[in-house]
Image (cartoon, helix red, strand yellow):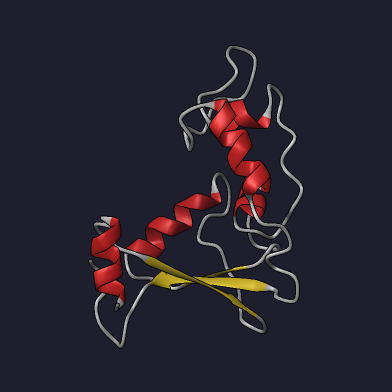
Length: 135
């Protein structure tokens, strides 16, 4: 089964990104402050982005991209921060998960040590045999 058949079987629609661990590449982050997840928009637009722990501006990005295995300590709790927030007086929620419990389960299931032996990740549109990345 090729990738396009696999994507159709799973119901994936749209663009797919390729994320590859690398060593010895020049890294940069087009996002200098705020959420580093915005680099995914650049990759979806066709750019290749290379990230390392040194260039990602936020601790959430370092954790989410696998550069750090330590979950973030956020007032109100990590689960609330990643979902809808803990309320007034706490940081606004990121709305990446639908509820705090799902965010906590996701954090516990996250693989550890994925960057052991690697210094960077490269994110770009997926290409299969030189073809387009649209499904």
